Image (cartoon, rainbow, N blue to C red):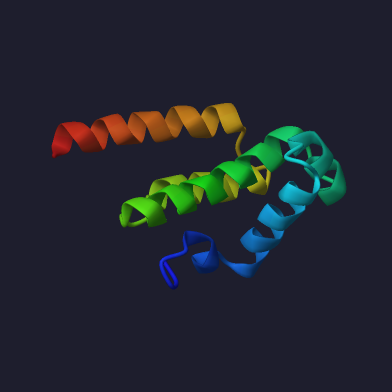
Length: 98
């Protein structure tokens, strides 16, 4: 977290996404159209940025499994629904092991 402001710690691509979302008045549909991608893919990108911000605020490391799955959803290699199911299963397993 740069200078205590989580947004400043985001990568340039993520900062641009946040900027474009604000300029689109928070419309994910409009943002997806601007990027030329589907709504679920845009939602996955936004969810990844939100996760980064939440982790930065909580001063915890980003979950590598969540990052991997978000990247696969963005590339269209896995559906958002499947990624969510895998992540939930992974987190349950990790909780049991700890």
